[in-house]
Amino acid sequence: MAMVDVTVRGAGIFGLSIAWTCARRGAKVQVVDPFGAGSGSSSGLVGALAPHVPENWNAKKAFQFDSLIMAEPFWKQVEATGGVSPGYARLGRLQPIADARTLELAHARAITAAELWQDRAEWRVVEAKSLGSWCPPSPTGFVIHDTLSARMHPRRACAALVSALAVMGVDVVAEAPDQGQIVHATGLAGLQELNQAFGKTVGNGVKGQAALLRFDAGEVPQLFADAIHIVPHADGTLAIGSTSERDYDDPSSTDAALDDVLERATRAVPLLHGAEVIERWAGVRPRSKSRAPMLGAHPLHQGQFIANGGFKIGFGMAPKVAEVMTDLMLDGRDSIPEDFRPEASL
Image (cartoon, rainbow, N blue to C red; front, side, top):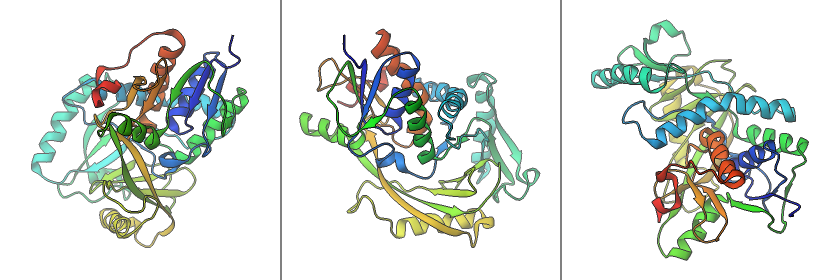
């Protein structure tokens, strides 16, 4: 019998979450990452866990909804075990409504949300003036207020998982031989391996830039205005992001694109004028060709598994991704949506 039941290659949010869920089910787990835990795109700043619009329902939206609902008990248990807060709070989100057509759509989505979200969260259209000074200006005087969105600090979330895993006897190591079931959660490097092997684009990297401000907004909803996420964190900072750049020369540098994001954010939320920028961040996020997470049997490594492609929604999807991958690896139970299988991107 192998000393290790599960080897997780990659210590980003997918890898750490899978390791945690496997360990909670009683498996002996090792996590292997030469760059350490929470590096790469999982080292970001924003942490907006927000749903897709409640219409044209499909497997991806249903999966994401389940994961967002799972998130609160998931992160509560992680914090209780390891003693490190991920900065999680389900405080909702406000979105200004730009025009009459968008207002009509928002009202229609409130009706579908009541059905699709199963009374476990709300999508409401409310008057901006009823929400106080934190609410951003809205051309129509109305905003969307959903109660499903949550926030977390990505770096703190990874640190919380590492601490909880350590209590469970699981460390992140730079190298170790494969043992037991093997899952590759290696982000961009894993997608590039597939591209090279198949001679075509199976996935790619999309650069994002974000900024962290010294601004304590308190326990208030995150904002989505002018296509920008504005996320107040529990530690008295506030994250703003992000860009989506497919063509870039330097994956880790910030530039005028981030300056533009900051300018638009302060224009959308005047309260932010004059807030100190304490960090600028850039990183490359893995995106599968199908745009959905890539989960299931690994296309190259027979008998092994893959969990990749969490572009923009990786932290929000992580609890459910961890559950279905653990079910598959430990119990042979396959509940992965067809659109999430690697074949959808090959």
